[in-house]
Image (tube, rainbow, N blue to C red; front, top):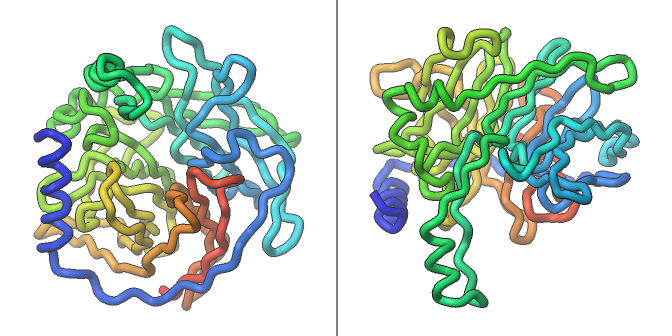
Length: 334
């Protein structure tokens, strides 16, 4: 299916699927990040580790635009955080790609996980380009093996890397009967695109922005870091045509930040998922918690759970495309 027909199918899915129950309105307050925020308009990932925020960008920095960092931020007051450590995760090159394309971060126990998108890209057409140049852009797909990495890190007492392990999930995707159909398609055209990562009870949960399958089902891959090929299984959630932009573990399941796969005009939402397969006959359940109002033209890209009570979740959400991620503190009723 070409991208135009795919867009029509997604709109039809949204219009025809029964609406989720009405969501509560979230309480919000702006948060500020201080210090030297690297690639500050491209923050795409956020998590909590050792009581600090961890952020990452989907763009590399440095003189050669090939250094991929995560940054640690300590809380200064209830709504302000300051950078305390810059941690170089990956140094790219022209051959394999300069960008890790960090799209999600998660932490559990002593481990910090960082994942690249594992995606392909097609460049946007530009009105300022010549007809010939635009046709060339349309015909070329960028493949960078640098994006195909999942890291497991431990940090020492100085919050620098103590141990580093990494795997690629590309071979797994290429052999899976569902995902293999989408491995040669650019991410914004419904190809493979990992944008969410959560950890729970020693298992990783990878949330896919794409592909979105028939009837709006989106895969979540559950696996063990040590043996991904032997341990993985695909679970599915139904997001009314949206993809997963991030995922975070909570006491009784997960929070899912959902949004458009490509450039289609659909809203961003925050939902609760009980962690079970939502395919008919499964025990999966979804609940819409809140529509997400975007500041300016930012794209909701990441969420970090700060705390949880019996009544509500407290979290920080960041927005790609805006300075320093335009972080917002949300209090959302369960």
